[in-house]
Image 1 (tube, rainbow, N blue to C red):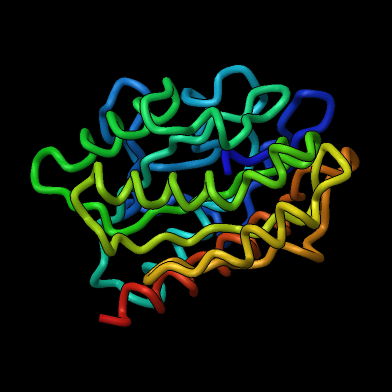
Image 2: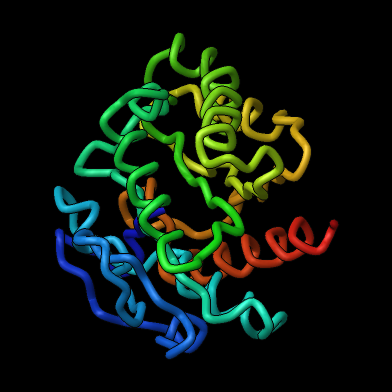
Length: 227
């Protein structure tokens, strides 16, 4: 989710397509919990152990405001931690450091009258290495979504998550099946399968990140407008 689009040899090429350009109505919550105008890399001060490039966040936000201008101004709250090796979903369990940090940032975003309108979740490549992790993925993902909704006091908070297209190990299809099999109200999964990858055969390319952001936006708007 933090985005490696355009990253080669730990260097980002700085290319920002039209669909991901900054917009004065799109803000991001920085690591020190202040709002600034958003631009890629959205996670540069959050996912600090990796070289962040272009992710799906800006094309998501631009697409949302293009289709429903009344939702602005729109604040993005980057929380993804990938690092050099990625993170397993078990590291995001309730009470973990990453989960606590996510909650802290989400709650900070509501100060001053803001409201949380949805969650985007894109993770799972690290859970394809170990068979037990892959088998446990569905339960852990369900627990994460349920706990997050409870702890944010929003039991029908829209969640849009991604079915991975690649992985670090042999159990990609096990994790994909878990992701595509989640059945919760106002939770929808978009499938990244077939989107182009970088040379590492793991992370999405810049065009793929843009496309994914737009897919996330369309799915989010369906959930938001579903009543």
